[in-house]
Amino acid sequence: MNVTGFARRAGWARGEAAEKMADTQSARRVGKHWLRTAVAGLLLNAALLFLAVNMGISAQTVLRPRSDHFDGERFFNPAIHGHERGFVDLLKWASKRRPPHWRERTDVQPGPPPARHAAPGVLRATFINHATVLVQMDGLNILTDPIWSDRASPVSWAGPQRVHPPGIRFEDLPPIDVVLLSHNHYDHMDVPTLRRLNSVHHPRFFTGLGNRAYLERRRIQRVTEMDWWDEVPLGDGHSIVFTPAQHFSTRDAIDHDRTLWGGFFVKGPAGALFFGGDTGYAWHFREVRKRLGAPRLALLPIGAYEPRWIMSQVHMNPADAVRAAGDLETPVSMGIHFGTFQLADDAQDQPPRDLRRALAAANLPADRFWVLAPGESRDAPAVAAAAASDKAAANR
Image 1 (cartoon, rainbow, N blue to C red):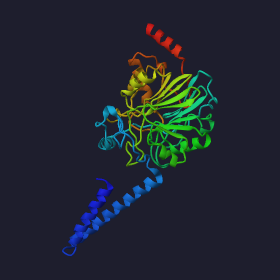
Image 2 (cartoon, rainbow, N blue to C red; image 1 turned 180 degrees about the vertical axis):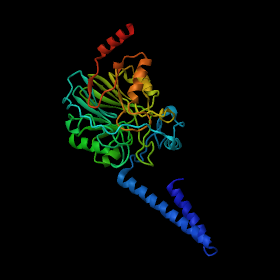
Image 3 (cartoon, one colour; image 1 turned 30 degrees about the vertical axis):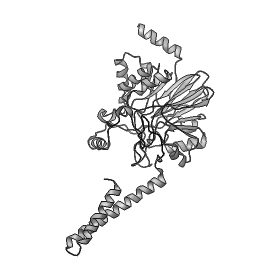
Image 4 (cartoon, rainbow, N blue to C red; image 1 turned 135 degrees about the vertical axis):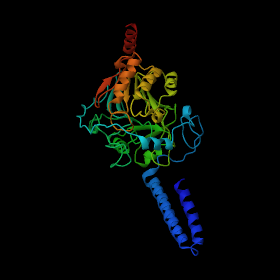
């Protein structure tokens, strides 16, 4: 029962009790109990209203046409619509979970400052942390789901805390042109970091439908909302396509799935980049390949996947990620979404281990799927070189 309904019920019961006050002392006690309950309910309602107005609900009610992933009020995942894991499943997991121990924070040294730009024809990726990657291609500098905050949380004193610092210091970033925001979860849409980027670098921000108003209320400018398969030109031969993903969105207790989630396909003279965002394995990887072609580099999530009974719909495990890379027909992939925040029940070093096993099971060499240390950079092989490597591997 929601808070408003509870308060109404309390008020009704209080009235019933008031009619009997003259008859018995117990009725007076009942009335007082329900009065306290009703007042508590009203105060909680007021608190929620205060949070909604002053902290901001992430999505505003906007009239949009229905689609194959929007029912008129909320977005949904076409492949599992009506069969999603819900709040009861979450409570079941929370009540029984025994998360493995993660090591205490390790203050590793940050990587060297990246070059201001990559050379023409180069597609370079620098792993920073979690789902944050600096991508440099043909003079364009892109950040994916940037987070430099200590916690992935709405507050600074609680919530998942990082176990290592970002691989690149914020002050060492090159000029950032584009920021890609896959969805509104706190580990992917980190407002303090976005404000710093907006203030220092003035980039363009791209995200799913429903997120612009929330960001603009936080003084984050130049925000473009996109629906699945929308394409926005950037100039100089670059464009961005917002692609489907199988996930969900929520920023607070009352905005579940009111904003859209997804991934990005960035086209450019140096080739294409695919950023998968946060997603379970589903139909969309093959559809991306069919519609947009094979990316030169794919950034795919490999962490926060245990236990599978609740996580598999929305988080890929490494075997899923290898399968997704095959669907995309990308010559090389890079693992993201692991090792920074403890969000599920996989062990701290489990994703790289499971990825090695998945690659071996698929008879793929380790260099087809990178796992980079924070601050480490690597250039994607040229498409011709990757094709030659695949042919040589097939002949061995």
